[in-house]
Image 1 (spheres, rainbow, N blue to C red):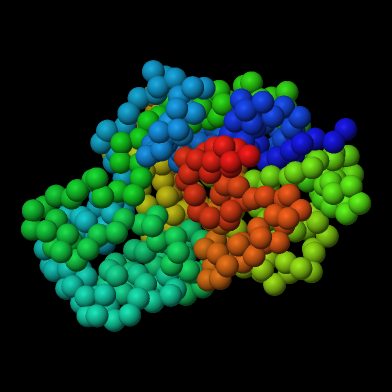
Image 2: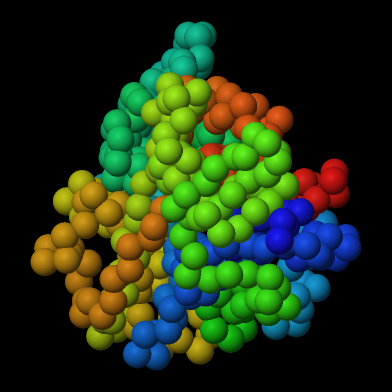
Amino acid sequence: MTYDYIILGAGITGLTLLKKMRQKGIVNILALEAEKEPGGLCRSFYVDGHVVDIGGHFFQTKFKDVEDFIFASFPKEKMYKIDPRISKISIEGMDVDYPLESNLWQLPVEKQIKYLISVIRNGEALGKPEPKNYEEWIRWKLGDMICDNYLLPYNIKLWGVTPAEMDVDWIYKIPRVEVEEVLRYSLERQQDVEKYPCHNRPYYPTSGGYGRVMEAVAKDELPYIKLNTKVTDLKYDETTKEWIVNNEFRAKNIINTTPWPDLYEAMGKPVEIKEYISKIKYNKVVVSLFETDDNPTNYHWRYRPEMTEQHHRELYISNFVKDSKNYGVFTETNANRFDADRVTFKGRNLFNYTTPAAYPIPLVGRTAAITAILDFFKPKHLYGIGRWGEHQHHNHDVCIKHALDFVDAL
């Protein structure tokens, strides 16, 4: 049997492709998923009464078709709106609202003055040209103090590479606050939350974790998904113009939603893309559940840039998961920094899970490399969609949008 389409991966992108294709009448399709259940990074675990999301996932989008897609499977009535969202940054021995540059007024006056002077003297304000790597860009945009005390150490912890190796084409993920706004917020002692790039008033399920949403999306698609099936071999038959997966499945078209470095190995390391694949790297994150004796904060999450802390983010699940056991917190730690015997979060460590992949690392040259890879395979009907297929740091609503647009264009 030859399928019209085989989708590699049944995370949020793969599930969206599968559901949308079937709705369009394309039914000779199959999705291959390495894990024992679909959902990818949007799954949830349930441990000793606690809910553990694989990363902090919330639903808010500017795309009407994405909203319609999610609410068609998981009704809005089963969600509640988190308003206000409370996210903090641990800085200078205290917790300040995110983003830091909009909330410098929360620092003691003597520290606030130093940060403001640093911001005012940034490279952009002095008319210097815009840099091409992340570290230089942050200094140019926000000054040395925000760079050295927050964004530099935080991103070293998160990505596992030096900021000088990172490009600036993902900066849209960071709030773009101008010097005039930083000064205004400090004088008025308030920030404009509408400046958040995402998730200022997100939706979250009223029961269970965010994985409940993925379970609802996947429910009708399960007959078209083969689970526990890792792609270990992928070949193109030049005679039949078909793809052969694991020497078992044949397809006219392949849609990849998995990390390209893994697929590169399965394809036998084709020399045609060797120079590009070196720029396509990803990290892994360890999600750790802790139980504490109390919870003195109302935070939803807190960023931890301090290099003395293993983890880079804490999510206070009992503050937003309505039926999760009290005093549960899960942390996120770059897998290369994680040491189970030296965890720094204060609490009883109940559970650790390492993601197969977490974030595409935005290395300098990454965008040109993934464009070359996609262009190379497109004539052979192998496509890449979503966070991994496009190797971009997309939130899951953008992954859904790109999957919907792809199917609409068929």
